[in-house]
Image (spheres, rainbow, N blue to C red):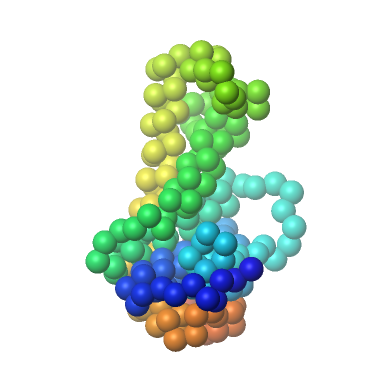
Length: 207
């Protein structure tokens, strides 16, 4: 449930509005990302704000393009903070955690890294439990582990750059979205899409 009783100072609301606008902007402009249905700067659980994206149809499989676009959307909030706020915050912690998990799965489970190849590194039984040392049970070398870490960073880094390009190119829309959020606290899909000029087209394939 939304926690409308939580009182936030103006600087915090400003940062949250830019953060969520960053997610929404990047999500709207990437061709493989799910459509943005709602953006809110009203607290919900532990989250200080949220951007709700819902696919137009059920998905059975996720493509490489879809997963990279999803990572770029995760990066959009942090990018907006970096460019338009006085400082970065801890607000991107969950975004970074989820992005890292997805990128790691791309490399270790889905064979989506040309460097690491079509090999599964570890399996579902490799979760860390009390008294169990994953480092001794993962089934691959320290060198391979370092290569996996490098690939995960590379994938996230590429998606971060993509998000930064979009935010920089369409910052006027980002400012308008932020102003609207600060005024209304919550906007829907129609209000959000109305912020864009007609000639604005989704960004093409993310690679």
